[in-house]
Image 1 (cartoon, one colour):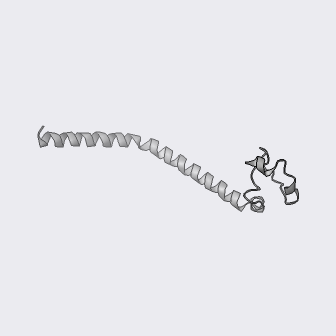
Image 2: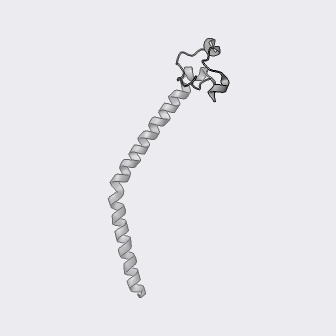
Image 3: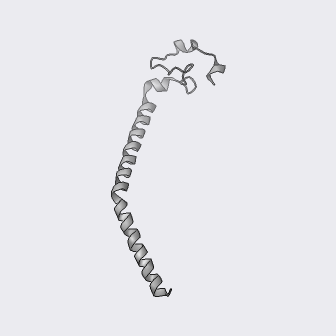
Length: 91
């Protein structure tokens, strides 16, 4: 195969690759839009969770679930001693 045939093959390959990539443009646009929407929703939820006054009252360790139950929103310092399980059971 001489260099002229190789150049033609390379140009044909490049045209076919460009055509294939062009056909993928609509699908990649939809995936990008979905990624942007999910990222914005995640960031908004995280921000709201961080600035929530109830979240700020709890320490990290006390915010863990109590014996498999989810922590309540009305958690206060007064009922912190009435945990349903011992510390050794939490881990």
